[in-house]
Image (cartoon, one colour):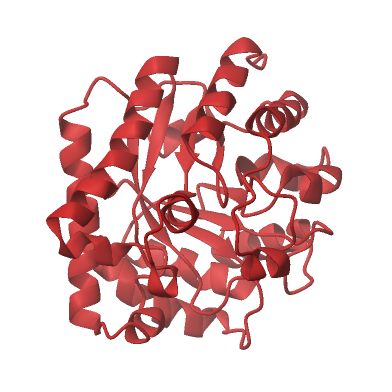
Length: 315
């Protein structure tokens, strides 16, 4: 039985595909400038909205082709107060961006109702995901992220997904903020090449701390923005691992610092990445969300979907 079915009762598939590599694809492969790594300003123009729809439709088409479900991720990872202010956007405009993003996704899903699709509001950290200068307390994080989540609560979003988080107290705040508005929440931590969060915390510690502080409210946890080589060895058959139900991996083996300095895209080997994710899923069959983060594109997503179909786990 799929772990996520309590959260997404209308989804009846063994695998959900998730893609959050759009920004690096836009920047490096399509030559589109995204100041502040923000893709939500594309909503301001007809051409930008068309481009966002292309990515959503590509995911829908892949789900249809391979018989999998898809998680449609909104372009709102940095659509929060501080990061928006750096680009000249105030809270009222950011609220509109967040709501417009979900409305666009709802529109795409409605005309593709044959494919099981989850609409996820993608939230990112307040500060640099790889090297946060200041770590908020859980209460501070709850107040901060409640602003963005409150805008999303008035939409048809299915789940809020906090991606690329670097320390547990911010994750706790995001979970509590989602709980305020009665929204399901998924938390995805990022790790460095040693398998630890950028702030030095282990994944086990982070997940345990979040669950203890929130009565296990998060639907599940994920790992994103890291290559399987970075975390494969720390995955262990322990109770905390049962809470990790998704992996959205980088194509590159580079560290976060190296990726920040990169002038060319490292897209790795799509087939190899898919094989590594399948190896992890064979070890942990409860992992039912797989996908691509930085450096990935539809080639990687297709290989992941095909590899899963060729070697489905035993439930």
